[in-house]
Image 1 (spheres, one colour):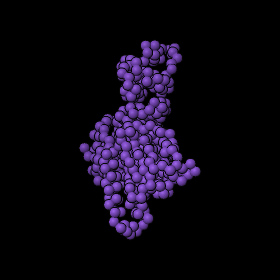
Image 2 (tube, helix red, strand yellow):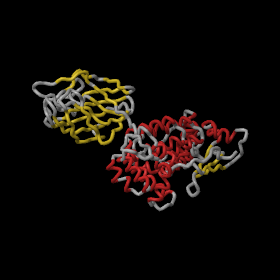
Image 3 (cartoon, one colour):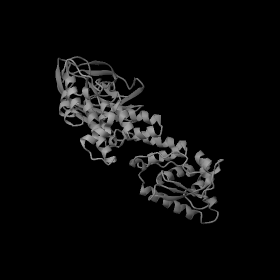
Image 4 (cartoon, helix red, strand yellow):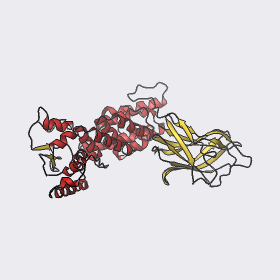
Length: 465
């Protein structure tokens, strides 16, 4: 039976990079196993069948098949044992014992990298999952190709836990390729909430054209349209290099194709358009003129570009107090820190805080806001906000939303400078349900100004879920 049971899928360089350290590790394992079985009655050294099978992993002893793994120039010869492989994979069972099985001593597998193939065999032989960031995508490919579902699930879980704005676009492309809808959904959650970080990441330039179009179509991107436009141009430059084209303006427009019309250029601020997109050279003269008329003329021209702004994500607010009040002897700030710890049961993205303001007329505050995890800053910003004298909360925003992982406590802090006669919260709750997300609160040792679970500042956490 032919070794290639599935059509070859092209992986990006990041997914197929060979790890020399992984190969050396497996080679050392092979030497150890060979030495183990040189003596007599080695089987008696291991009490379980799993341990005895583990000795056979990457071992020439009793091997009845060999694989030549990897692309030309980077191959590795790997020994195997048909019975063990057939028990671990239905594809190997069909290959060795099915109706169309062929008696092959050597099977070539050019589309799987050696470290990833060995990681799959280690799971089949040893019931051990050994994953690393450099090879997990290629290991997922191998697990999918040879139908090893539990290893594939472990790869997806690994990717989900390491998901961030820096790699979300690349993982989105791969999750669609591997038909992993749960991972795809997680990628979209990160891309929507942290759109500007994701679009400015190096990984965005590595995605394929189909994934680019799906991102440019996205209604819920939380990004300025100028950022979307600049990201598309960066992608086009990288695509020119992949196609061995000079990165001229004309070639950038060529590789973008109809995707250019998925950028909602007419929804940009006029200054962004005039100083950016209009002078980029990517738009034709007629397109530039028509968009200027769209901004200024009473009778607007027909455009190929979408003229409706993206909806973005609607921020949600977790309010942790049941009432608020103010003291006649003032709530003093004077450089002291108001702080609270919180945890969530689902991944969310903290976009900012809702803060109280003056209780005796309008006032302006300067706020230094900070979000930390185990003492490490995740986000900080110094910003001013205006309080109108009401008991309402007033939003202050981080520059970018901060990704918050479940079941881990984070510290939200603020240092305020402004009118010291202000509102403060009362009747605080230790647990608050906001939609599908549960927040838990506890006091923070960083708080030096009286804020705690029962009362104080930082009445709201503003988040995307």
